[in-house]
Length: 137
Image 1 (tube, helix red, strand yellow):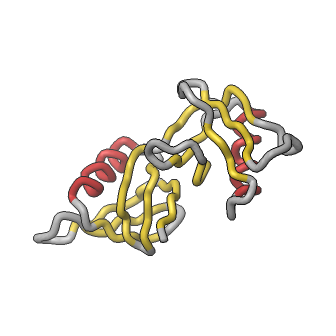
Image 2 (tube, one colour; image 1 turned 90 degrees about the vertical axis):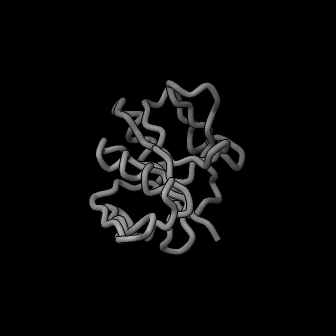
């Protein structure tokens, strides 16, 4: 099973002779990266200090991409009916959604609500081509 999480890479250790290595993250500890494309993407994020979205299978990075970081234009109210809350980022053309049934719904909603109230940027992990927020900081 895959899990999508949002992290900051704090250290990288290449494996000699291989195309990847291990990374240390602020939220998930050490993870393995076996694919060169993901390693290169994570290197860029590490150097630039970007929050990164990771698709994980256990402790292995399967896919990596920069997280969306933006200000919120709108956030659906917790009392709104339905299974999903609307999240509208300033620079994104389409709405994102927060799934009420998701395992980290309460924690992610708190992060989004605080960013909305304080008008600060928030980073979100969304699967490529997806619309559901998998992680937020």
